[in-house]
Structure formats: C-alpha cells, structure tokens
Length: 577
Image 1: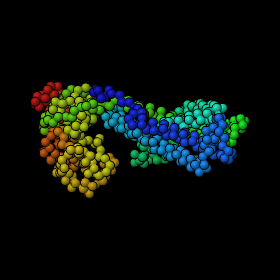
Image 2: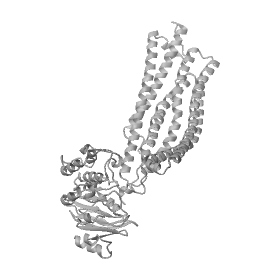
Image 3: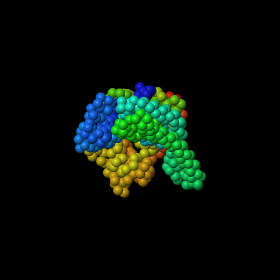
Image 4: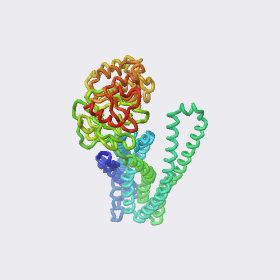
C-alpha cells in the first residue's frame, strides 16, 4: 500500500484562504447596518422633538441631550439624513447577500474539488468506491446543503448577529429596562429554537432517508426502463414509486411543521419586543419622541431575528451533509500520486510484473520486452481484465509492483504513467458529444498537430458524418465495433509505450484493418486479450492465467487447450531474457 493510500483527507476549513476576508466584510456589514439604524432612530427622535418643541430647543443634561442637539438641524437636513441612513441600510443589506454567497461558493468549491480529487484517486472497481448515484449526491445535494449553511447560516450569524447585539445595546442605553427585557425574550426564543432543533435533526435524517430511497429507485428504473417494460413490471413499479413518493412527502410535511414553528417563534419574539417597548414606555411615562426612536430600533429587529432562527434548520442539514462527505473522504485513495512525484523518464518500454498479487485472485510475474505483441488468455473470470487494470495503474495490488524501464509506477506521477500506458476496455466507455471530442479527450496537452492522422482518417471514413458523428451516453449511436475502434484510436493519441487492449475481436468483426495495421506498425508493446485463434497467432508471447497464476508460453503451445503449469513460468522468463 502506498503512502497516498494511507493518507486521510479532511474536510476543508471554513476559514481557509480568502474566506477570512469575506467573513470580516460580513461582520463590518452587520456593524454598518446597526450604525445606520441607530442613526435613523436618532434622526427620528430629533425630528419628533423638533415637531413637539418647535424652535425652543432645550439643552438639558438628561439622556435625550443628543436628540435635542439633532433637533436643532433644519427640516431639510433631517429629511436628507433620514433618507441617507435608510438608503445606506438597504445598500448594506444588498451587499451582504453577494458576500455571503461568495463565502459559500468559495467553501463549497473547495469541498467539490477535494471530492473530485478523492474520486479521481479511487479505484473505479474498488471496495471503497460508492455508486454513481451516491457520488453525484455528494457533489450536488450535500454540497448544496453546505452552501446554504454558509450563506444562510454562517453569514446571518456574522451580519444579523452583530446587528441584533448592537441594537440591544442601543435599547439598553436609551431605556435599560426595555433593553434587559428584550434580551431576556431573545434568549428565551433561542432556547425554544434549540429544543425544536433537536427534533428537527431527526426529521432531517428521516427526510434524507426517504429522499435517498426515492432517488435510488428513480435512477435505477429510469436507467433500465427496458428491463421494467420487458418483464411487465410497469404497474408494480408504479405502485412502489407512489408509495415512496408519498413517504417522502409526509416526511417533508413533518419537517415543515418544525421549521414553521421556529419561524413563528421568531415572529413572536419580534412582536414581543415591540410590545415590551410600548408597554414599558407607557408605564414609565416615556415621551413619545423617545418611544418613536425605540420603536424604530425594535421594528428593524424582526427581519434579522427571523434570519437567525433559520440558521438552526440549515445547521441540521449541514451536519448530516458534512458527515456523509466526510465518510467519502475517509476512504482510501490508493491511486493518488505521491507528493512531488517525478514523471516517468523516457525509455525503450520494458515492462516488468514483479510479484504482482491480489490476494486470493491473482499472482503474476512476467516481463514484456519493448515492441512485443503479447496475447493474454485464460478461462472466464480468471483475472485478465484485472491484470490489465493493475498494469494501467487503475487498481492497486495487494503486493508487488509494475515496473516500466525499471521505474515503479506507484512512485511516479499518475498522469505521466497513464500517458505511457493506455488501456482500451469495454469498462471504459466513450463520452457524450462527438467522435472528435472523444479523440481529443485522449490527446495530451503537448501533442503534435496532425499526429496519428492515418488512424484518424481511416476511422473517419467509417462514420456517416466523419468525426462530427454524435456519440450518446456510453457510446450509444455507434456500433460496438466502431466504439472499440474510436476507443483504440483515442488510446493511441498520447503515443504510449505500452498499449493494453481488452476483449479484442477479429478485424472482420471490426469491418476494418485497424487491428492488423496496429499489430504491424505500432512501435510500442501491445498486450491484448482475445479468444480468437487468428489474432492470438499474431502474438510473440502468450500470457495465460489459470487458477489465479500467470504463466508465460509461446502462442503455438496454447491455442488449442490449457497449458500445464509447473516450471513453465521460469521457462517463459528464460525465453524472454
């Protein structure tokens, strides 16, 4: 096992990189909103005081002295000040949304890239690999839950949390009793929301469970509609679909009841603060000018309180999402390259399997000399495709190594390894798009213009629209023979030293002489799997897998039947050397 296979990948840190600056800007936005609201309330009090006292502006030393000073401004100045503070509040609120989204997208981008790197370094057929549907869900649904937690959870805490704190301080300064009661009410509401959150956590898990079952069912039945139709299961599957859809709907309704209760709590808290201001103000005999400014501050608290309450909902969703993503990232990544790994050095292309072993399945030791044609044979499920994946570094062996010109592939840059050793297999389908897109997908960045034109022109002649011929998902729209030829030419685009071909059929089945020309003119080593005697006879060496053991022979000794084991591996190695 390589060091990369043992390395544990962690979730990105929320405060990583430029996100610290974005979070600071959000805090400043919340503080700025609080300053603007306090300024608005100050101007409201000054305007009310001016209306009440006319031009006889008092200059006493009570708590309202600052308001009496503001009341001395002209009506035009007061009006402009009110409009300016209101506009500034609105603009800061508008600026907070894109800042919050930038913060969220920055974090989710780092999560997605870490997931992508993890999946790219995982074995496609390994025991730790998730299904396609589950992997896509990690990239989309779970990543979206994290995005909402950052944009609708963390950001409101930074912005609205700062605003509510500043507003409570202002209320306490103007009227200590009102400030204390308002803070107590907010704490009481927070406790109630926390209790709702504990129940919401279970509802979120139940909802996700039903959603996962529904998504898995739809994904499988839509992907394999023909199976459902051919077996006459449409009506039965429709009933299953109806039941799972209703279960998911009921779970969502139960979750909505809790989120509705939390929203009602926030609304009740906002109304309660207004009642506290009015009641305490009337009982204490507060002047109507002071009461107007207090109501102004209290009125602005409603929106932020509602936003803070929804934080609990997004937090519960994100907890489940983070746990699911962390489960994926905790799996081994045996195909990840070592840090600072050097690319493969150029050489003639001598391939060596040094004690290559997959426990209980395969044991292989052999040498392929540069330019050899090697046919790989064996009974079904003997491990032929597995051996090709091991050579191509698409799967990690339990022991042993694959050496190219004496270089251990596991210790070098994976990109350079896969440029030097290319595999064509039914397990590696074509991508959606065009034939030209698929060919360019196998082309290295430094490929010479016009490289491999002979193979490309021969392939284009077989297609109805040349290289512009459309390719559906998994190569649909092309015959099996053409799909294989496109995949073969795609593999040749990097000029590999070793070409691995799985499940090769005769050139008559292909309808072209591509395989014939490949075996004659391709300068590198070719290892191909075939059961066809004509193609097997073209090989220089035969590798055969029987009962999990690889043996090396001359092709003429094998074609008509199985070969005895014993001293033959040593004989094969002697012939090669």
